[in-house]
Every structure is written in structure tokens, then in C-alpha cells.
Image (cartoon, rainbow, N blue to C red):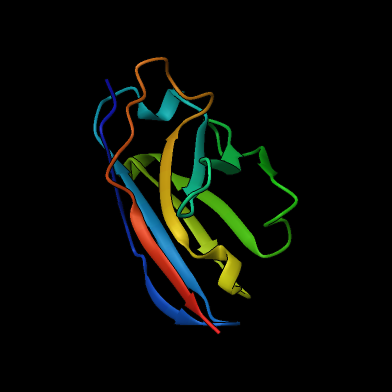
Length: 117
């Protein structure tokens, strides 16, 4: 089972940038498609982006397309989310996970991103 630890969140002004990291344990990390998700207060968890096991194929939700970039380094068992042109509506707890998400959840603790106006 893959265990996930997200980091890199923080407080940033509108228009700023952050780079999130997700460190995964387990030897099978490189075989999984990975995704980034977020959950704002009072809202359901939202899919943002996914990346194939090879890193060659990516897909983005319309809400972040052109602003966020997902990448991975299988040698480091890490997936990244570069976030540019941040908006107050990007404020949320950000999570990574396998895509599609496994039936048992497997969510980490997430990392808080707060964008001030």
C-alpha cells in the first residue's frame, strides 16, 4: 500500500505561486497514475490533475488548466504540483492520491494552501 505525505502549502497573495510535493512510500509508486485533489471548506473534494506512471500523459481540470502543472520523479517517489497565478478560490487543503482513488481511500493529511486577496 502506498502512503502519501503532502507538503509545500502556505499563505500566498493573489497571483503568487507555490510548488506542492507529495512523497510516497512503497516500491509500486512508479506503476500508478497519480493525481492531485483539493477540498475547500464546506465543499466536496475536487479533482485537479493527473499524471501517468511514465509522466508522459497529463490531464487537468478546467479550473486549473494553464495555471497548474503536475509532474513526477519516480526515482524520488514524488509527485509535484506547480501552481501559478493563484486566486483566492484556490484556497483549500490539497491532497495527492492514486488515480483513480483506491476503494480504501489512502488519503494523506494534505497541505493547506491559502490565497489572500
